Image: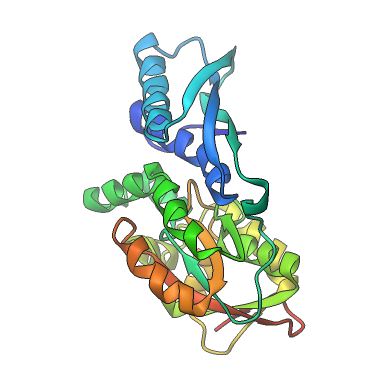
Length: 281
């Protein structure tokens, strides 16, 4: 279950993004979403047309996922909020967890990061139109194709990258697997303009909370770009999958992912635990 206030102005796009974000957890665990219920909070001043567009966006994304809207619940609130409660199914022997990564595994990230920074920049009219369109497409994109591609390669571990940011979710995977995940900061895919905005200090408050959360568990090598480190702490909305799997499988999987997720990249590897859960190089 997940829902949040609008992060874009267009109600139809907001509905799609919120739905994709809610469906993501099921994909991250190797499941197939089957039923979803709408969760909607609306102020009395919101027009019926706007509400209809939010729900239409969610409905269209759910149908794209091969899922069914089976009802929902609406309450009055001072700020709009929308999302889904999703039920999915998975074979008991094929459920993926954010633990199980093994030393030697490659770590793949399927979507670029920086959504929190760009949505913050949008509020200040600092994001170019083309980059805004890329941002919306990335957030509205389902993780279904990435999950479909990875499952035949039997991933060791998988999670989706959302509010705890890349470093937060990587830490959870590393901690649960008792490994050190070594991240090559130069290989982490960034949304266009994310670096420039972060360099300007356009960073959401949630990123600083994430920095505090991961600080005890992360070692940073000398020379790592501090701006990229900040972006790796940026809370994501409807982010990509973080996948751990044997390196030889990763090399075969990556071209398949890039066919529909061109930003997909191998961003590091898992190693024997060395005292810190994350090493950023």
